Amino acid sequence: MAIVIGLVITIGSLLGGFSAMGGHVLVIWQPWEFVIIGGTALGTFIIANSMKTVRDTGGACVEACLGKIPRSRDYLDLLGLLYMLMRDIRAKGRNDVEPHIDDPLNSEIFRRFPRVLVRPELMQFVCDYVRLLVIGNARSHEIESLMDEEIDTMRRERMKPFNAMMILAEALPALGIVAAVLGVIKAMGALDQSPQLLGSLIGAALVGTFAGIFLSYGVVAPLAYKVKSTREHQMRLFVIAKQTILAFMNGALPQIALEHGRKAIASGDRPSIDEVESETISASARPANDRAPVQGAA
Image 1 (cartoon, rainbow, N blue to C red):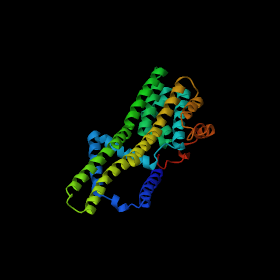
Image 2: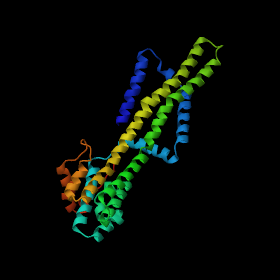
Image 3: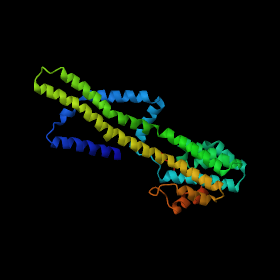
């Protein structure tokens, strides 16, 4: 919704200001200039990136437009899952915990927290490091280094759409100039025509420069930063899991380990200590079917 509002304000101000200055808005509508810019931009984007990145960029734009970032419920579900796993590791034997991390989709513990189950990468991340924790031979600093490497790898992969879009944004002004030059070439072929016709052809050519700059700085670059912000919010879940598991490995009680994870949440989204206790520690004693089903993860 914020993206739509921003675009309406941007385009409305642009067209409104141009009209208020006495300009004719229909002059800006030069579809073939936009075809040249849009087509060459799409073609160069496909040339420069793998098809996986191209598809991921489309998905990332949809996520950004729909605001697919973790909400309070996502954080609470993750902390609740980690608490139950840590509690069972302390209270029960290795054989009681391993079935849950070996087959999380059929695990009674994991099924209590559907917002983790709908994130396969996060679920696998938790299972991998809880498995190392259960083995008991790994040192915490080694696990931390391994976690950092995996999180950095995932972040680089998830930031590929942002990097690709920023390269495209940098190229759009130049592509706009290409469209403008083609328009000028067309105008030069009509030098024997009336000044009115020649003026309209030159004006149409200049629309290419305008469109390339506007699309770059007014649409693609802001959308790229929205994609970056969305993906960074999604990566925060992995940092929370990392901080919680490491605290537990270093000897913290499950309740204290949860606080390490809670502090990794941005202050504006961070649930209170009472919420965490109510939704994790207290709720872990309730049957799984007492929890509300997920309506769709952010």
